[in-house]
Image (cartoon, rainbow, N blue to C red; front, top):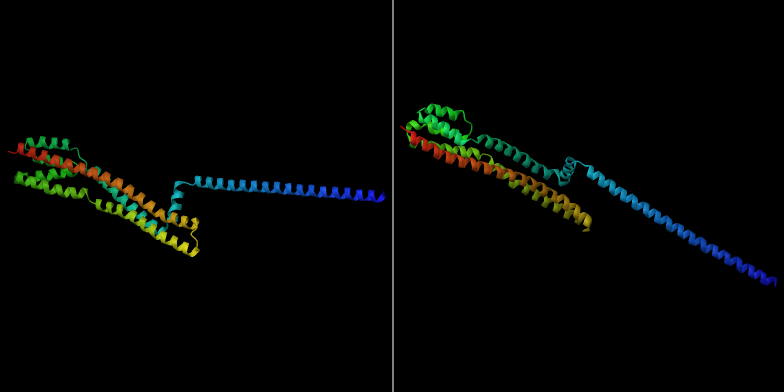
Length: 269
């Protein structure tokens, strides 16, 4: 009977010990799982906060800072020539815009003043009106009036010859603007091709065509093309504006020259 009680006591003790061990293992596993979950959550939260902070820093950058960063990423040796094309092209555009605007003349008003003087035979007064009027149209009329004593034919020849000179002056530097329009994207494409060659060299050195290596090289290579196209678009818009203004002035000069000769013919004594 004592042995039986002893056996039962041992079994009960072992059962309780095993239960406690299993419970302790379960508790430890649960604690470990909870700890791992908390750690993963904290890690994810930290990464999210880092991403949000990086995004906030990117958003807080000014346009000048972003432009400077992209300029450096594109490669100073390729971006600098494109920048020079833009500066020189815009300088020529501004000079042409000022010249063309100053060359615009009220043709009807000028013809009326010349006609009032020619009707009375006051050719010197008509010349004075042309001297005091700004623009190529007044210069053309002055040349015609200056040769009126030699006959209407000489006056017409003077109008035609000096009109061609004034047209050439209006179109001066336009060829350089068109040159920069062509050069800017060409330099951009050249920088892109060179950058892609360098990207393939990096792939060859790395021995792997991973997206990181390819995307990084391609992004830097394409920046030069983007800047070159932007410069070309800006200059092209300005170039077309100048062409339209020059065509308008030339058309006005031709129409006004015909009216001017009609005035001389009608009032020639």
